[in-house]
Structures are given as C-alpha cells and as structure tokens.
Image 1 (cartoon, one colour):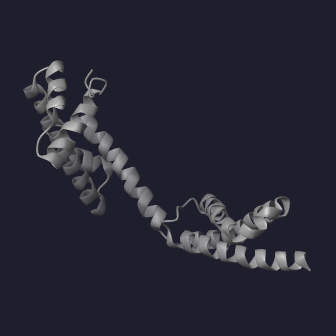
Image 2 (tube, one colour; image 1 turned 90 degrees about the horizontal axis):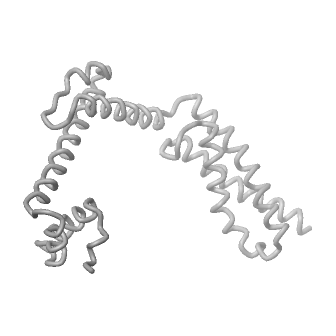
Image 3 (cartoon, rainbow, N blue to C red; image 1 turned 135 degrees about the horizontal axis):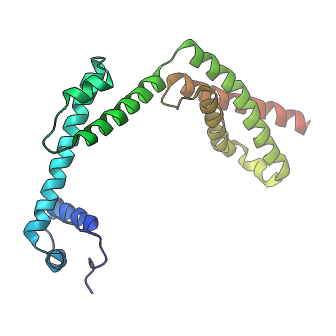
Length: 200
C-alpha cells in the first residue's frame, strides 16, 4: 500500500506543491498515486485552477482594501468589482467579510477616551481579582510558595481576559496592552504586601 493511498485530493495537491517547491520535482511514489486516481494532466490543471482562483481572490481583496480606504460603501465596491473567475456571489461575500474584518481591526486599534477609561478601570478590577486567585492558590497549596512569581503568567492572562471583556478590544490595542501590564505590576505589589503581612 502506497504511503499516499489514504491522502485526500487536497493532501495530494499540497504534497505535490511542497515537493515541487522544495525538491524541484515530485517523488515517483506520489506520481504513481496521482496516476492511479486519474490523469496527471488533469491533476496539474486542478492545481493551476486553484492557483488562479487564489490569485484572483487576492487581487479582489487588494481592490476591496483600496476602496475601503477611499471610504467607498460596500454596495459601491460590489458594483465596481468584476472577475472572470469568481462569481458575483463570491465577490459579494468577499466584500462583506473583508469590510467586516477591516472595520474590526480599525475599531480594535482605536484608542479613544472610553477605551482608556475602561482599560484603567479594568486594570484595577483585574489586578484585584487575579491577586485574590493567586493568593488563594498560594495559601491552599503551600508548596506553591516557592513558585509564587511564576503565577504571574496566569495572572497576566486573567488580567488580559478581564480587560478585554470590559473594553471589547484585544491586546493589539495600545491601551489594553498597557492596562494589562499595569495590572500585572499591581499583582506583584499586592502579592508582596499581602505575603509580607501574612508572614508577620
């Protein structure tokens, strides 16, 4: 049984591309498996067609970005874009998806007064919540005393998730990133003060 016998057609195409790119030509075993399933010419035509579709999608996406930056509406863009490879329905779908993606990225990166306020409030709430969780773990499992500062990693994650929830923005946003860092620094301060008080 051939190594490639259980490969799907997409897997065979990926293997063919990889071997052609990195070795200069596909292996004899791969070519044999392709031949068993049909003609090599048909297989190569499928690969060429997939490449054409991908190139066309990328061209359309670049056009969508350009029109978005020119503040064109989705309807205007959909009417302007034409393709001999992609259907009107596929183009409309790409316009919808890409406009939504670009809008999300733009909004996510925006640092306005509301984002700053929510981030600062989030850093205070998050640092308190994650400190309580860390302290509980340390006190419940005394062996964690040695590793208390390693708990800052999960604390950072908890801080980020709380701030993300409050701001509805990811750490790509500068305010969220800084607020998460501040919350983690506060964790260190709270933890030091609480453990000092506990030990005395």
